[in-house]
Image (tube, rainbow, N blue to C red; front, side, top):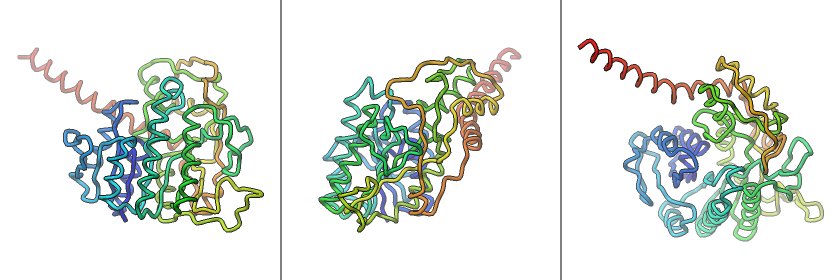
Length: 369
């Protein structure tokens, strides 16, 4: 089976690509490696997959040096010609579309980036899928689509007509667009509403990364809504396991679907929506406390009002996902934080320590000489 993973240099895309490669799938990764956050981190992820930074050039498929079943192309989803050419040449069986312009707060300042990447880019994926023999299109949605909803836990049966940010609106647009193409062109599509994904190699704009970095540096951390927040933190391995199980399970039409009482999560077309979350919301202050305990430092906290576009609580109902793939998330937030901090220290602090030790040794030798 040949699989395209878009956003392969991103957090989830990198972890998924690594898992699929290990399972023997023929994987092509795609990413534009934009500078929304550090490109050094993105290239470091790709290096884990056997990609040499200097070998990566625009719109050229590059072979992995360590995995014969992985190749990579640097391009934008907005480049329709490049996407169509890639689909025509590769003949993908499955596409997992994880590429997107992420970040709720960033969307307040850069709205056009979200329309270009998340809407136009996704349309190009759908159009390319329309003209191929794709067996399954899986795409990233977001828990942010629940917007102003306060009924907990969030269920895929709930209405999502009140998004709180443009980012959320683009993700809802993706779900609507996918349904249209499932209906018109019989493309099996599965949308995944991710709930606050975290773990090693995570995004630097996410809370766990920001808090850990600031606490280690002795800098204050910003805590919004005066700490009265809860998040359904979901560890990256649980996300990847769920996607891995969904890949060979494309949706089929729901024969019991009725327009008189429509189920938003299924359809008369081959279309499905799932939440992927830990289904166990954690108070933000408990999350911060666990980071502090594991680092051995207390943080200075700036308690601030709610950010525009944000929500106070998320909580995923994942029972339909469990019934579909027989899997519940396994990793609790304490273990997940431990795994992230171990990675952070190994990636950011140990190399610095080695470099400082090397410099000290040179300086000592100079003095003794």
